[in-house]
Figure 1 (tube, one colour):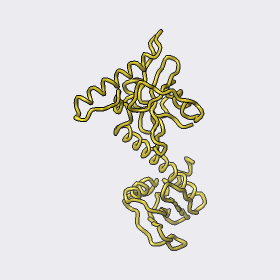
Figure 2: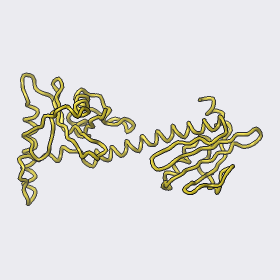
Figure 3: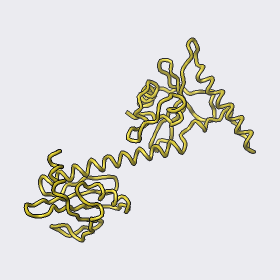
Length: 255
């Protein structure tokens, strides 16, 4: 199910929910209004009720229990398709007081905008301050980087352990490149480690990958022109190192 993502402003000021660490995507925050919005926008056959009084942006109503919200749909090509941009509680015995207050807020924002700009708005409302801004996009990029780092750590560990067990190269595909790891631990010899990267990868990502290999000194990686049993293919890069045998044994024990 495609989840509706709350803006940082909604979490902090409307729902009064602390911003979670970057390894928890904001759309996974648990709240009845967010759950309702996600179900509402996951089904293309569900009709959405527009907030008609707000005319500068298309916002949709989200209602569950006494909670009320306003959702905004981004372009189809956007990474996040829908956002919860405003939220509040319906007062006991009142109908759509939240939406009346939201309309009044956007009309006041329009008045402030027109007072500060030479070219006035011709719409009745101004709601741009509710929509996702730089902080929201920065947070999304931070989450993406965190997810990638966690996956990279987990995958490198799995490839290392797999190669330690059978002495063959183990590989995994990432977006834009393929990562292969070959570990050879022979009796009476040092434990040899080789990292193969196929694809266009920036230097800082290579450094990150090499620094994540357990048991190998990050400063001791050496670029190679061949793998133990073959020459390199086009677009392949290989680095070698010596792995601490105690670290290798510990990895297998933990597995």
